[in-house]
Length: 249
Image (cartoon, rainbow, N blue to C red; front, side, top):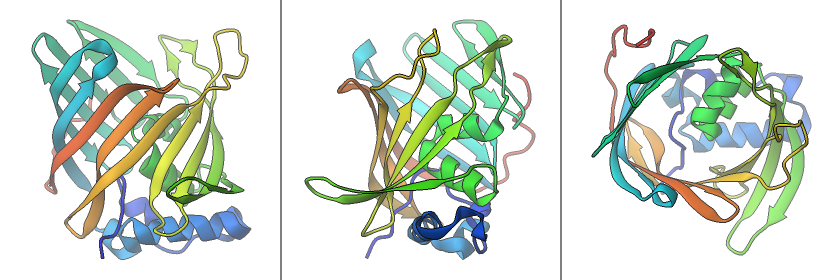
């Protein structure tokens, strides 16, 4: 039987959850930890490299090369390359930078957990919740055509780009009631004038595979208004020391 895990699961999921999560939220989170490989397996991870491809159908960009180097819990270096496309994102856990088309933009992270979740919501949420940075509320269950989901919710403060604050975002995390897999995340933002946005961004996680005792999601689909914005496919996972690569590029 194959266990299920989204892209980044590791040390912050280890151990026993405290009572701060309360009631059914704690039970759902506990089940997700087990489904994502279990506390013992996740605690062994420190540095991991993911390689694969990413497609942006709405922009007509196909099969770009993706390389993501991650140091738990909050350091990430992601490169996307292809014909006429080069994009680098780096965060050292406190600050972040984006380099694209020859220019660099600084991202000041007000809430490190928030930015980490933006990069990969499912495990980012679980890691931050386990570390005590995020309160989770259990909203109940929904029954869909092919699955039943337990929904957890949290709200994250926004980051600030070039000193301009970004709006907070509300997230609903769908945990499969049977497998414990975090299979869907709904991200609700706010408009420029501060009004809540009713239509969420949707992240779906499928096609799981095992590497190093952990089961990873091999496919991530990102949609808005029913339109597929991007599709990530992870083809290779490596566990090896990454060195000091998470500073300002």
